[in-house]
Length: 116
Image (cartoon, rainbow, N blue to C red):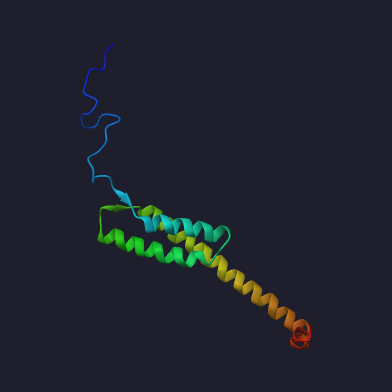
């Protein structure tokens, strides 16, 4: 049976805090990219465009400044933003297809549209 009698503030002990400035920071743009990508998938696909840009800029910042971390978060943001943009493109094609189909069914579509 051993009793803990050591110094609690020594390097590597549980509960010790590292010196200021040595904590690696996660790039805020990477986190914003991931959040905007998720929001883009769930409801507002236009946020995917901004999320993709932020993710790419964040990856560039991490290459220039090795003290920044969050490469996985930035990659996740880029992927989720790309999926949101893909959903947006598919939705636009779907709505254009439906609109063109309505025009093809009714030759007087434009006249009926303006006479309402």
